[in-house]
Amino acid sequence: MEKLWAGRTTGGNAALADEFNRSIAFDARMIEEDITGSMAHATMLGATGILPQASVDAILDGLSGILSDLKCGLLKIDPLAEDVHSFVEFELTRRIGDDGKKLHTARSRNDQVALDLRLCLKKEAAETVLLTKALIQVIASIAEAHTETVMPGYTHLQRAQPVTFGHWILAYAFMLERDIRRLDNAADNMNLSPLGACAFAGTTYPIDRGMTARSLGFAGALPNSVDAVADRDFCLEFASALSILMMHLSRFSEEILLWTSWEFRFVELADEFSTGSSIMPQKKNSDMAELVRGKTGRVYGDLVSLLTMMKGLPLAYNKDLQEDKEAIFDAFDTAKQCLSVFAPMLSTMKVHPEQMRSAAAEGFINATDAADYLVKKGMPFRTAYKLTGQLVALCIANRRTLETLPIAEYRELSELFDEDIYEAVNLETCVKARISEGGTSPESVRAQIRLIRERVLA
Ligand code: ARG
Image (cartoon, rainbow, N blue to C red; front, top):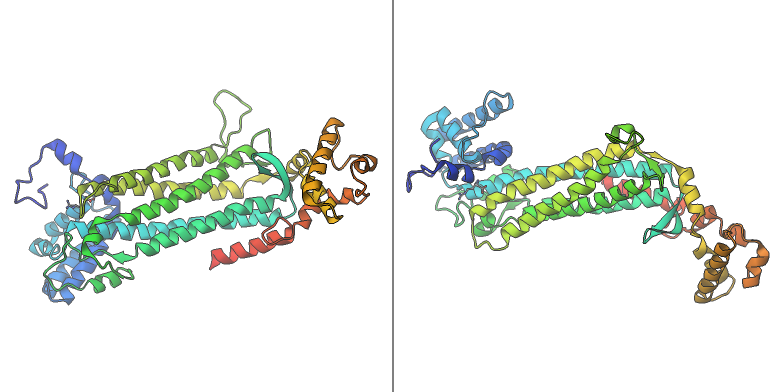
């Protein structure tokens, strides 16, 4: 295939160079955006009188023919084309003749590719948000079913204080809700059109950038034409939002992996979302969660590739920028795939409240409540803290728990202890008493569920 740019040189490259230069293998996925952008551009060229309307009509006709033939499989993308932009232009010219050669008036592939990518990423960011919302809904439903399910909360992976499973899992919903805001922000920031920047300096033709921007759904046109073709910060922002989202999914996965182990057995994944071993017949593995955790590294890698690719580039366009696509495509493909698997993996997950309750019964996770009991009776917190520590040591030495230590032994340490200490250290009481805003009591958690649902629906 002849080069778009044959002229100054013959356009005849070494086969190796052609192959090295070619981006059709990955930018072909932006063909719809490329055609939509070209249609908006051609329409504007007609409206401003830059091209005769008859040529514009022929171009629009030709482009919609290409689009529909692509959709029904009649037209195949030529894997030997240099990139998606040349492919569409050559195909158009093949179909409509010389009018096709007029399409690129007042345009460069530099603003064209920046446009295609923005159109594509806006759509992908919106889809990622929808998938994230669906996952939040699943988490909210699980939380709703477990506002009274007592489990040990952890710090340093040591049993720390009693919480409910609903409260614990809902933490992820709020993290993901911030991810949505980051994704929306990235989409907002990329919502300006580079089209009309041309190579980088603008053009002598009387183009109407506002018109193309509006017709393509942008809030306006990027104010500086050099910036419009030179930067890829919109990829970086999207990739960072995706990396943070993946970090959250990865932590969540890590917990699911712990919870599905025999050491915890807090939950069990459905067979449909588990795997086995080829040699150990008893195994039930949580590969989906492991893959999400593993793929997080991949998305970070995409972000670092993009950052590194950009860091030394002089203005304006440089061919290095062609490397943006595979990285950002991989980042959102991966994140969307992870979100898609995560939601049904969670919604089919079986929770074992009795296992959580018995884990909560060991580890003295009500010690803070015993100290608070003394504080309520007038002891300074630091003194109560120390005394309760001695109490725990006494229990460990005598194989007791705070629930089973006889009152006489309590009273040897402090006269402030009475029979009501047993009610105070009861795990259900401990949970129900944490009514502070955002806390673990069933009513606080129900308020949090209402809040997250409102935010996701908003
Ligand atoms: N395939 C190129 C890219 O992805 C399209 C833009 C080409 N522009 C140029 N001046 N060679 O960046």
